Image 1 (tube, rainbow, N blue to C red):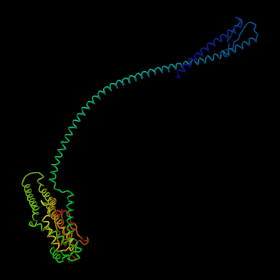
Image 2: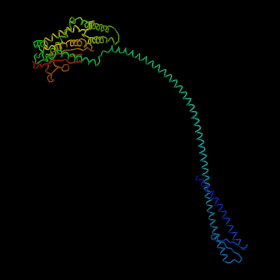
Image 3: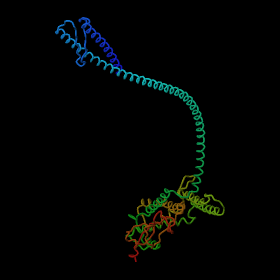
Image 4: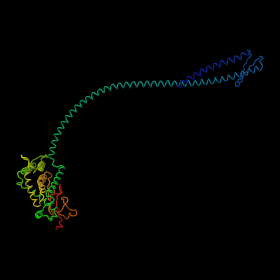
Length: 466
């Protein structure tokens, strides 16, 4: 835009200079003609002398006066001045023309550059258009290919989805079949596991220990604390103490000792009465038969496992599992109330042992309060049942088998396996006077013994006693 304005200005200046040159030439000619025409022809001679002064002289042979001649010279000088100015303007215009020519050349060059640039731009534009067109054609081609590919992929996807659906149905059927097989295998595994697992759970061990502690509490409640309103036959108690080899005096000041002694007596009598099958009556024959047949079966299984070849685990533990299950049943229902067509009644062997026990205890301590006596004697059946269940049956459920052991009278006090009432400082000189309840555990005579419950003992100071 700036080059167009400059180019237009140069053209205008050139036209103006040409007009000025024409006017200048016309004016000069007119002045010279007008001046010279006034002079007589053949009488005018113009001498051009010094160019620097630019002076001109007119010589004539006519009779001009000096004033006239001076005036004419003066006028000629003025003309010369005008001419010089015009020449300066001409030179200036020439310079302007040259400058305009230079500008014009520059504009031509710029114009050529612009043409080249325009040409290059057009070429680039054409190239870009071609590239865009090629790109568009390629995109259209790709889109067409993509549409075809998408259609093909969509078809393949549908085929795969249908195939996957069939596989899922097949897999679902297999899962159902596997679930059935796992369930069936689990039954066999559970049966085999139960058949070969001889270890009792921790909860069983906890319950077993609690059953022992509950039995100890029942025995204490049955013997009572021997007060109040209760008479003790100290002579008979003294005879009993001598029978067990006790050293503690039998008097009112040692009722805890008498209590422990009677507890041991009650426990021993209950177990002793069970040793004679005749005493068990008709009801007791069933428990006796089950236990007898079980022992026979266990012996047969042991003999069979030892005399027949095989690698199955079940045969190795069969006798243990039979023992645990049978004695577990006896420990749960043994000597419980008997069910008959007429209803239910107390086991006749429990009735028999309860009567003997109550009579024996009443020989050593007499309960004067009838209600209290009835209450205490009513404890006997449960006490007897629990003692038989524990010592005859439940000990055989444990694996390894659990045993019980009384602490001998006169043995040293060992807090690791015994419990009683004593000061720790006195332990070294204390001895067992009576063991009212045995320790229960396994491997009691080996270094690897395990105690479920400690033995309950009543101690005496053998130094003071001696």
